Image (cartoon, rainbow, N blue to C red; front, top):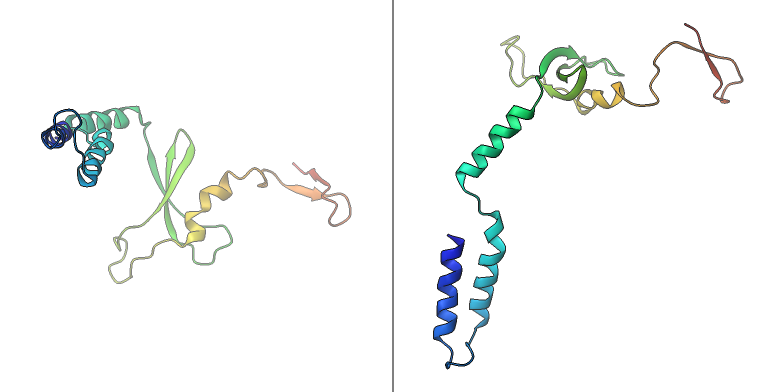
Length: 144
């Protein structure tokens, strides 16, 4: 489609010239430029389908674990953790009121959706610690 459009515009440009130099109007120049710029972005449906197939083939198996937000939250929102190879890859919320028809849709708040960042933060506590220095010094020792 892009090639056809570009060749048609170029025919119009050449036919308007006096034989030696083609007369090009601003309008035709913009049309030709737009067609050439859009050409790489035009893809066939077969190419898009092939990309989708390879994307799903390379993706590891994902397990969805239902849990709730426990970090500094009183609401305990229902969240779903998407786990691949033992690592939480993303957090999603319950899309409907499937658990209780009387209850409105309870989507997790921003704090619950950002729970993955707290789980893998480098400064998180990984084991119990005891302060050994004065308050504010930042000296701790591992208890167990």
